[in-house]
Image 1 (cartoon, rainbow, N blue to C red):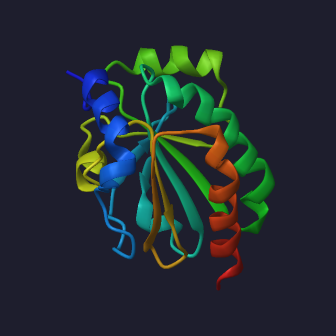
Image 2: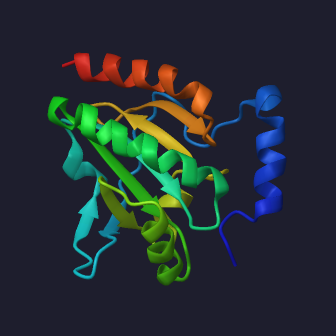
Length: 168
């Protein structure tokens, strides 16, 4: 069973302009999540270890069409803003990790990949759509929530990232 069936996702995305209902509210502290790196070593990660950095946290799955388009954008974010204090973390929610690896063969990632095997982090964020990204400031506060991925909105997202990076 997938966290968000594709039918539900399309229904959620259809009504976004009307409802704009987000799971975690902007200005709330980001949940403390325990993740593991999506690698053979499975190194443990915790979101609180990135306090002091701006975090672009993205939830994705291999079956998510818009996720294919979001990966090149996240590669660009990593390349353009890593040295300024941005940490891009993409959290996979596939039940079968082999599907995630197949996805990554088609769309390579040059940023930190994590796994939320039991979907505890996704539940803590009350995830409603795929992909969903969160901008978290240096103090661990959610400052922006973005459901889905549309290339026409990347300029606005980049401006928000620049603003957060400029804050100390």
